[in-house]
Length: 459
Image (cartoon, rainbow, N blue to C red):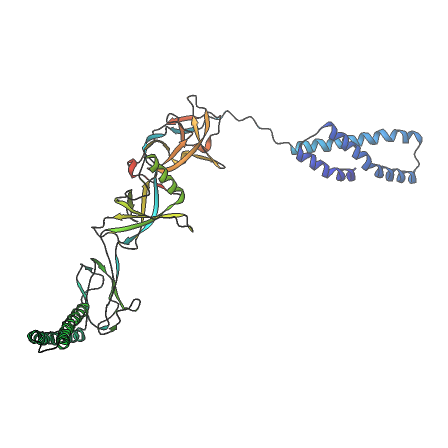
């Protein structure tokens, strides 16, 4: 009997885990018990035969008694398994109260969607100061990084060689002038002699040609004087524009090279300060959007004359106004963007060339927008939804289409009415069709005006 129970132990455990006792299962188990117990019964009968051969009456009465014993054991095993796998009976929980949630109506107001871009400031004029002639640098007349005005003296090159060249050119002018005077007298003396046929025409023409050559030599000498004066003026290197000068790259006493392109010695740089340029790139999708808005007459965007607002890292909002003065004539093929440039006033000197900033452009006309805080919006895989509470407390789910963040609130483009009561707090505790205990509260909106709110451009 113990052997049979051990054979049924795996089956009893399975039945106990499942907790199922059906008529078909009992029948199958009984059949299995008969088949499994037959070898054991045969062995027991053989042993009894060796000891004492049973009578026919005993043999006939043994069979039903054995089946009865096996059946009762099987029932006990199944009963024990079903009792073991059955969960303890518990009393039904009382009706849970409806969850308490906070609901509010969306905020509806006129807004403008803004597209934000990152760009950099650049000087309107950038000058590399180089010498126009070769010579030894005599002196620098500025401090590194100071502001300079147009015409301020920056460097001087040793002028003495160029002064000597100027003196030589002036002497050549004097010699040429003297020769002109001499030849002029020769021509004046020869004219009466030519009239009286004392001088031949050939001799007179030679005198006249000498006079013209002397006059031409005067002009050449005068040109040399002007060239020498120009070279001498180039020994004084002045600021071509007003702006902030860089550091001195060449110390006094060094020989600097001037003249031909690409060979001049770089002395310093100057960048203009007011106004400044701000360059930024607009995505292809936004470029198309701006052109369509401009074609509709709604806004003037992405072209010369459009208004841009600019801010730097520590600005709150976009306090600087600028105007687009340049739009590139083609999109950059590698990035799919269009380069725009805005002109920014920099009288305060706040901006510097190379500084990064943010620009925003109105990406839509003014319209009535419906807005909610982000915590009131749920996500169901790829879709967004809000939970709306009816007058009787029933919860309904509405799919919505979202827009940008404006004034700290999320714009809901479609799917929501300004009269709907939306669950703001407790969204995780409710499901569609459930009844809730709502608490109505008005939404708190930022004090920012519609024109000072912004949205990030997706490029």
